[in-house]
Image (cartoon, rainbow, N blue to C red; front, side):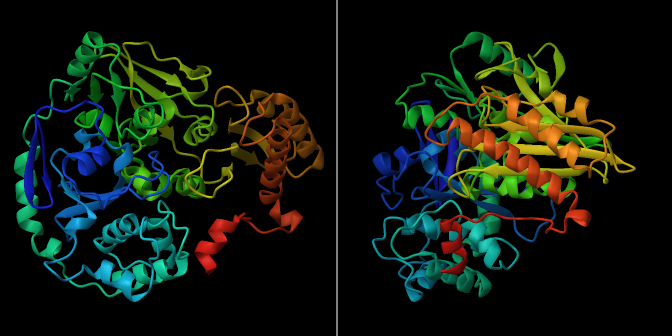
Length: 492
């Protein structure tokens, strides 16, 4: 049974389609139509709602609940268990608008209004954070919401005004009581006839063996697209949300161990603390509502050649930990991807965790993504480089690439040909450029042509070489390309 709070009302669901999305549930069963359907793929933010969950006892925050914005169109009902679901209809206090709603009115941040509920909910989630946000934080929080009427300046102004002049709202006033109710709900069994929610590796192995055709998911941001975009149906689904080993993050002595089902939002601080060079790639990987759901394991397991994190895992020599309930094994990320959407996983197996070894502080790591949109877009080309230099000469260079082959790929020849050579030498640059120019035979598609991808790959190599030779080349450490939409957000 799936149990949760819909605002302050307790809801129990014992029978429902396994692939029923939260958006369908709200609009068709609860008549809460303030939540809109736009793209049905987690790209536009019109369907944004907020989930509140009890803060982990390992943390010591001032608040009892953590609020996060999610895209309801790519969320299955299992994600609600033990949480409070808040939609735009629940914000006002009797006849008084919530401060974020009133602020949007005061700053004239709405015209047609279709996108407004989504913006309001993203602003509400930000409003519930402990720290006062600056403009960049507001932009990050609104990165999953699209507006085509007002423009972003009044919306950003509204968010800044509301969040920098916070008042205690009805949600904070009721927070202790709400947290107690959620703790009671969390202890209840979540599994239904159509939805299996194992809590141990043995239960997961049994579920996979009994229902080999069942879809398996953590955040559902990928699997749900098969329902909303391809109109596929799933009679059975297996959710990984209650698997402790798959939802942990451990900062080990030699590296970071990230559970396969852990959402990106929960691994962000640790990942970027140890690998700050991945920050731009991480933030451009997806907008905040998607990062609040999507998992690293899902990004790896689907074997997509245009996934954003696999190139980074290849460059950083990551290791994939695999389990089948009886035995565990580990495999290097470089050996995991076999063919288009084909991985080294057997049907009985799943990814338990991903281990990323720490790099030496002297390593030069850079991650680049080229896409049509700044955020929430698939890579046309992704390149990640990890270079170790000793006495001015290349000791090791590892790289990972996406969008240029049938799988996320590395180029071993870069290391073998450049090892021992002077990094600042133009000859070294030329050798690397020639290797990359011939390493792949990309496809032409709607995102980029074959020649564009090859040209971009060699241009990113040049950028990396120039940036890491800045003392002699006299260029800035970082060059950021900002597409038109991003300029509009920042400067409108």
